[in-house]
Length: 175
Image (cartoon, rainbow, N blue to C red; front, side, top):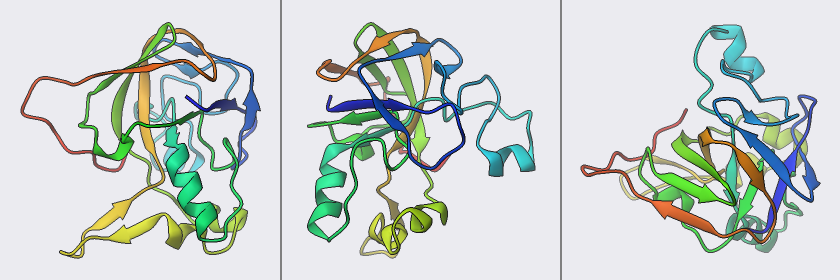
């Protein structure tokens, strides 16, 4: 793992940390998106009682490198992620995959659905993290979302173990 980040305010970017603490059923300790129910402002406006399936946001360092090659300057945490992974194909994981990170365990719930805020950070970034496949289906590359099953400390350099759910595997959809 490359980096961990959190921020107590509802800002787009998060601050890189030496370590973060994941709290079972809540998310990242001290992060604005911590909670049992949804904390993202747009989702709270629709239904504040819906469960928080977006407690922890992993994104791949490889995406940051791809964006850099396209002329964007994006450091770990700046796209709002809590965990910046490396060498793990996040977008190819099935729903309900367990990620063992440090002493914590998170369960993958779905894809991050990037919004217009991303263009407020850097113009053109939204288009850079969205693609279409040959059939015209939208591909969201801005990371995945997860919930915390087992709390614990997580820090850069921690290995990430992947535990796939039983088959049939469910593809990730936006959450």
